[in-house]
Length: 265
View 1 (tube, rainbow, N blue to C red):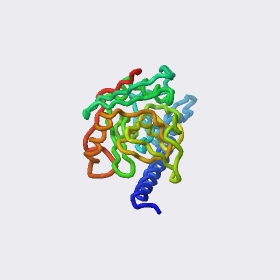
View 2 (cartoon, rainbow, N blue to C red; view 1 turned 45 degrees about the vertical axis):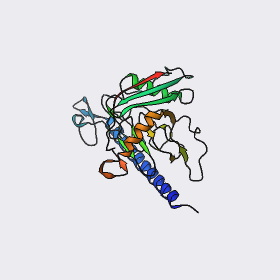
View 3 (tube, rainbow, N blue to C red; view 1 turned 60 degrees about the vertical axis):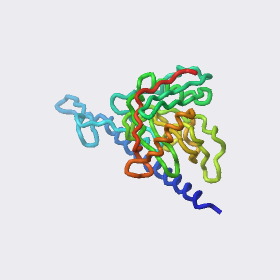
View 4 (cartoon, rainbow, N blue to C red; view 1 turned 90 degrees about the vertical axis):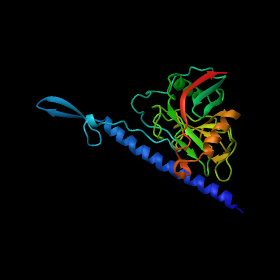
């Protein structure tokens, strides 16, 4: 017999996954709009060729960058202006080494150990972004306190829609064991994993910090582990709750990353 607590967790997971699907669908719609925005209509006027960019029925002066959604945990389709664009960074790390990402925040330093042997492309991407100051002055924009227990960070826009303009592949998905009958595995407290759109290989820059054991599908790359002091700091943020006394949203205790660095060792 399924206990009421188990049933509550199952319903929370199912709600979480439905949200992912809706947001992924919204992202696909915005991608289609982006494709329209990129279309160039050639109009012949008196023998001259005039190029007009069509943007959802508006001319180019009204063009706005359209980004996907990553608050699922999820990732962006198009980068906002000023963010890195182009392909995934070339491999520039020692794929056999261990690295540490240190985030200096107004709630203390969050230190994350990363093993490049298990998640080389994820670690390489984080180092490339951190070296460019990508995470500096960003907020951890989402806290969830029911069903799943995570603090989500890594969005330069601070609203769940930002990303680096490229995707990195899923890695290390079997690390947390085989999924149970409910399709989920346990993400232990202290785990750090990639956010995505709900689709395979759709990670970007957003990630989530697990502050209490959480069951989720094994579809989020687990790439790091917080040390004890860092976990305690995140748990303190979680204890402060969500704005508006909600269960999912911006944390009442703001977490701003002043600086993030990734170093070997």
